[in-house]
Length: 251
Image (cartoon, rainbow, N blue to C red; front, side):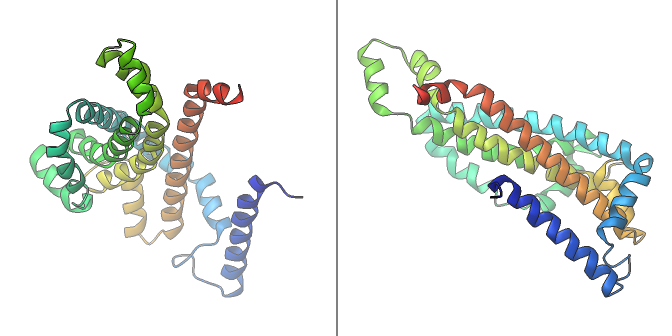
């Protein structure tokens, strides 16, 4: 029997085979829809043309993700420890996500120029919300029986937070990080569309304007790869940091 983990690979390979066959059978022009082999050839042969774009986007994505995740974590902790402020600001937190980034981005360029600041702000706005909301829910859903037990044992609010609430909110925190990791790449590409001189977003724009659809798909391919790599790294960090919960469950 095939392992369940191999099923997605089989589906993806099957889709690529169908795509390749359709491109050849119906002789679809390359500028309309290039075959997977054409895209792969361009990805290999054109590495020198876009490698600096990838490294630029990677650097921007990591910086924005770290900043956004940090802001989300701080907001979650502050709103959890100060319930009155949470009641006042939580609706604004939700409303901040109702503004399309693609609409807000030009305003950030007007206010902060074409430097790295508006780009980091865009990624931060994209990344902080999943982390903040997930962390707030994790902190609020701490087992109240354990909280009462620690209070009866004489624990302070600081001890309850650091030794009980924070550790038990880590699974939700990592869930938010995984969502933000994929969003961070998207935010970096959107920010590069606004006025950068290098990056995957710039490479994609240049390829699209010159009808090099194969290069557009190469850009999409590397965006997907970066998202999957970030997601996998956070899953690894989650597995390491939450190892105590696994060991607890085995006992």
